[in-house]
Image (cartoon, rainbow, N blue to C red; front, top):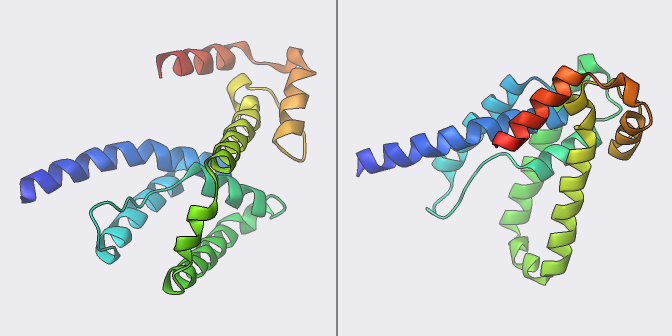
Length: 171
């Protein structure tokens, strides 16, 4: 039993490391913080949840929401602010759980969920276009950043674009 649990835990850890790193990049902090988040969330979730069906991990939607909430915060204050947002979100979720508000999620239609997830995916893709191309970006949001890359193709750094495109193709 312990051996089987260890194999499952190892597979989960291997899968969560890149997810955590990607979430940290979306938020705008070091990927190391994403590894910490994936590790600590899994440990705390495993110690506090009572079902084998529960998966506790970082999500891109939460990272995108945190990035949006912290977009106006100075770089020196980003980590303490991110910690505060994380704690507040956790407290709100715990309160919603204690009030048994999860049952209302069944009223969210499949179409709404598909639209939400598509919006998240498009927002992330547009927001990362500057990183993919190596071009300096300007803009208040992901669409503005993508527009600045598309309107100034001379700023694209070809080695970065080729490496990023190859990584996407291999993935």
